[in-house]
Image 1 (cartoon, one colour):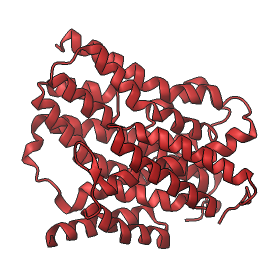
Image 2 (image 1 turned 135 degrees about the vertical axis):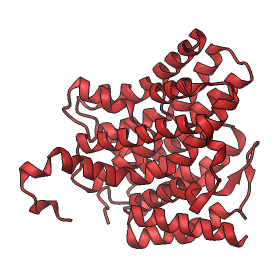
Image 3 (image 1 turned 90 degrees about the vertical axis):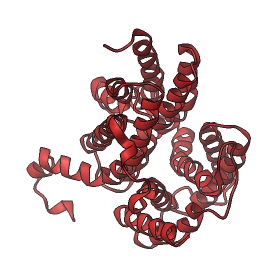
Image 4 (image 1 turned 90 degrees about the horizontal axis):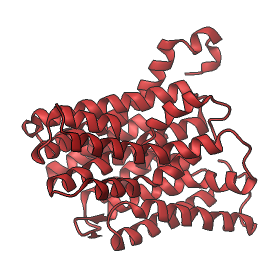
Length: 244
Length: 107
């Protein structure tokens, strides 16, 4: 699919943009369905109605934080601790958003504000890879964000209505997100420096995850490993422009 | 219709979720960044992805503990090799799901 052949008018037509966006987003949507359903079921057990479930998915749009929040609601926690916990869980998005910022220069506040809403682990990973490798732009990235967002909201509400009826683990769907992340890691290994940094990050993440419950290991391991990687690069062992 | 407490909670969660996503975009995308930061941010994606995925493969449970002999890790090996070879996201997802499902049937 060589987009050089496409005349400029059609390259950015709504249809093309939506098509590219949805084609890119479908693994995320696929992976969100079982998780969203599971969340809906849990939320309903904790006493939330489908409208309330949809409201949370719409305003928050983070799987991990929503799961934890709902279990805290179920065990009667107060508002403030839940909000603080949500903040801590989502701090890693600071790093992700920073990496994306490199590719989003010169955009107006309103576009950035809209895009910020949809930054999740999965949309970050997919959009960033596309920005690095293909002719990707904000519109397509937005389609990815919102397609996965819509799927998330839809599946959480569906789960709230009766997700227990759906058999678990159908067709290996639980592995969709892991498989996606594995491929995205593979695509990031653009040279030996990246491989070593990835190994350091992974090992560190595993160690920290065993000590600290929750998601803190992601941001800790990532920040430390990236710093070590810079040190390795600066010490001259690797060419800064090593790209495979 | 929705309980007031709950609405407040979700609004609060929404705000603290949105800010970490919004701040870097507003700060970093509109001014030139120092070279060390660009290089650092260039390494961040691979570290985040690795930090995200590796624990899911080798740890499990609550409280978390190491568990190497789990299908997630075993299936990850052929899936990752497939990804390296084909560099296809869609293909890897389908293959990974298929192998995982097969592993589930056989074990």
